[in-house]
Length: 220
Ligand code: C5P
Image 1 (tube, rainbow, N blue to C red):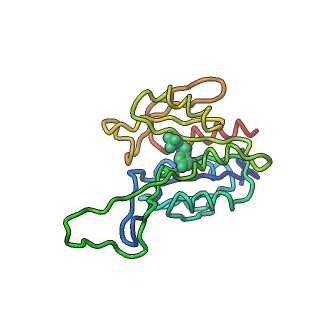
Image 2 (cartoon, rainbow, N blue to C red):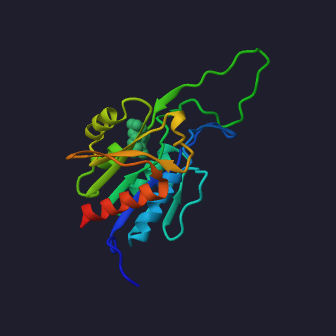
Image 3 (cartoon, rainbow, N blue to C red):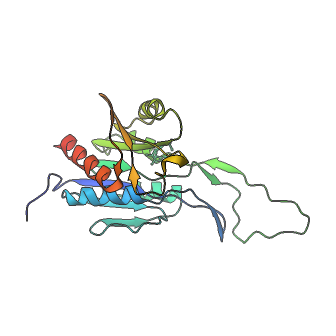
């Protein structure tokens, strides 16, 4: 047994989509499969980290050898992140719903025969990445966010890094023609405090390994 570079380090990873209920049988979701978050958690574990993996209802099963916390909504995800022990680094790969349904119903909504559709009202979800980036003593040394964009990827990601107060942004183009969302490959640009770095298109597991190695270097 050889201890990895992240032995003794704790890392939190959020992953997957969130589901925001409309009523007990319906919800609003997004196309995140959770594949990149699963790969990142596995890569961090492989380097020896103790990983807390907070996941929404993802299509891909969580990796072995990590502490899994399963949640459904953005509010639950924030609660789970706040409840986790202090970590050295946190990677926010989850595709958190921006809005939740304000007037969700405790009972299944039914057609009332009038031909009128119900109107949903929304309110903004808490921004988990921004919240954790703003923590004082409990703030992880390294906070990594993701930026899934369809336009002006690097410019938007650079602005997002500042706005969210995180250390790094992993930016990717999720335009449908890239096949990245739900696919097995990723092409990302890493935006740090010192500049941007375009990584070649590679599998999500290779992207995860490269990111885990960078995280290990930053924490060393
Ligand atoms: O603002 P946007 O959703 O594009 O930011 C994406 C990044 O912020 C991702 O790292 C995502 O996990 C995180 N995020 C979050 N909580 C939210 C919205 C996004 O942690 N409510």
